[in-house]
Length: 138
Image (cartoon, rainbow, N blue to C red):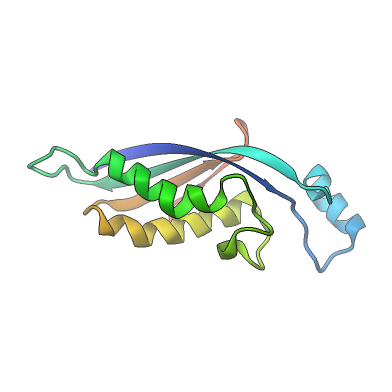
């Protein structure tokens, strides 16, 4: 099995806020991330697919086609957006990195088979250089 990864970048604002809680409780749990005036991140998304190389191209997946797919279906939907207000697939969800990566998985798992026989293996989403989540679709 060969694993191939593509990294993309986007910027987005959000706040962590549970509407069922008081502002005090939100501040207590989420700290500065509950700022009522939002805050932003420079996200990096690493998409890893797996498969066998095509005998005619030697590719598991055409990385240019994967990049276009990621940009069209994910990055363009969130880049320079407010994740809480501007992103329909996050409606009624906490805009956490964990929820974001699951939403990305649902989109990419549906779209990747349209361009390749490769399968989505892992998503890694960096919120900061030191904070990131990994998701394997489980």
